[in-house]
Length: 120
Ligand code: SF4
Ligand code: SF4
Image 1 (cartoon, helix red, strand yellow):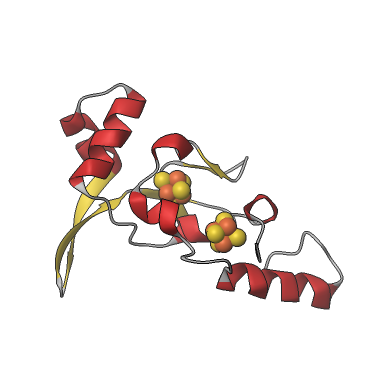
Image 2: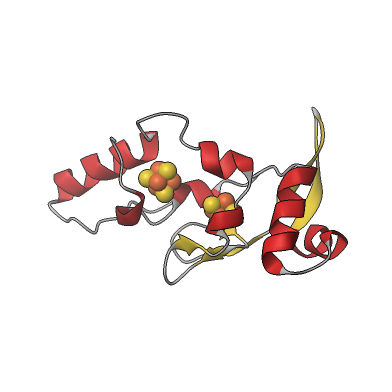
């Protein structure tokens, strides 16, 4: 595997539009023990893109990236609903390499600092 999520501050969870399906919302609702309607309203909203409307996860402010997914623990730098995370989160980064992690590893090597995080 060409990346290590445990050594990354969670860049992928800062993507502005993390789309969820109805099945994703149902899984999250079950995991959280709340009604589907509540999970949809509390944790997602309808984003109107040029290509059409899509339901995406809410964000909150973050000190590393401008904002991150509402389910991201900003201190621990991890997903709080990992077992029930949406399909798109399961698939990312779609292979054995993560472009962001390669960039991060390069910058850490360059700065001779294994904890270095480039500013967003
Ligand atoms: S950006 Fe890449 S290395 Fe970082 S948490 Fe996401 S998948 Fe893992
Ligand atoms: S649901 Fe979890 S894995 Fe997916 S973006 Fe949010 S914090 Fe990251």
